[in-house]
Structure formats: C-alpha cells, structure tokens
Image (tube, rainbow, N blue to C red; front, side, top):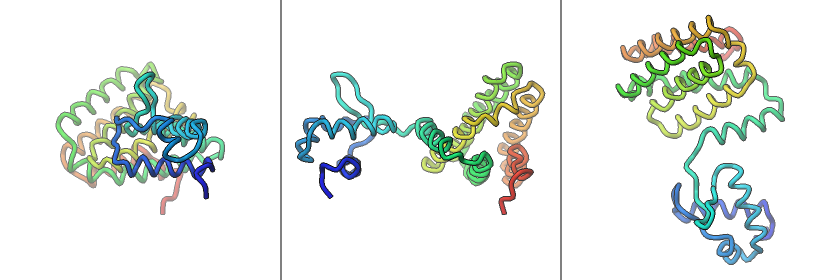
Length: 223
C-alpha cells in the first residue's frame, strides 16, 4: 500500500489524527503540512479532508483552519438514513433497533436522571400536548422527549448510539401515521406515565410502560 492511494490515505489520515491526541474543537495541520507529512499532493489531501467534512468529522473555518468536530448524532443519523434508504432497509428494522436500545437504557435512566431533566421532560410533554393541532411540531416534541431520556442514561457511548437510532426513526415516513390530534394527545399521556414511573424508581413499571408506548411487539417478534 502507498500513501498515494486515496482509500488508504483516508485511513492513514484518520489514524494520524487519532494518534495526535487532538480533541474536538482543536485544529489539525494544514493541507500543506499534511501533504509534506504523507509525501503527496495537497489535492489528494484536500479530497480526503473534504470527505471527512462531509461526514461531519471535520469542519473548516475561513482563515482559521480545519478543526475536529464534536460528535453530532444528527449528522451520523442523516448519513446512515441516506445509506439505508438506498439499500431499502426494512422499516421494522428501525423499530426493532429503537425498542432494543431504549428499553436497555431504562435502568441507567432511572439510576441517573436528574430533577432538572425530569422537569425538562415534563415541559416537553406539556409542549407536545399544546401542539397536538400542529403535528410536525408535536412530533418534534415527541422526539425531544425520547432524546432527553436517552441523554439521561449518563453513558455517553450508549446515549450517542441511541440518539442515532432515535433520529433515524424520525426520518421515516412511517411517523406521519401518528399525525393527528387524538393520537398525539394519547402519546403525550403515555410519556407522562413513563416519567411518573421513572420518578417512582420502579424499573419494571417503567420498562412496561415504555414497551407499551413503543408497542412494536405487536408487529415484531423479538425473541
């Protein structure tokens, strides 16, 4: 393998950034410096960096340089969603993945959720109820509720992965089947029941209410 091979070069530049010890928000070397390090043209380096920027890993600021981005689940979900659409991923695979990760996170959510996060979740539920006649915004509130609970698990890796799955699910057209006031009101009340179970510290009740809320067992055999 040679440095001039673009796929190999991409792997080498990723490894170089990882081994550099640089953190999100820090600047990496210039195209000119990387070209000298890898003994290739700036054009080839630019192609690799542009690819990393499209993936959301890097960002470029005029006259300041190229920086490492903080992890953004929305960018990852968007890229995966496009890939999944092209490969015709089955809708029920979204559902199955979402159910598995959200139910698995509940023990940590009960253990680590803060009073502030509980209050924020209750505010989101109120907002969702108030927006029942504006389905797109109510659906966004629904997403925000689930993302908040996933963040509350306190495990950064699990929370990040879970957010990707939750965001993926909200990209699908399937969501629009819920876009009517009566269903939105029902979902908001289910959210309220989940929060009450979390506040009581009852894991079994929390999991049961979350499972009923997601209700994918009616469509998928997870055994």
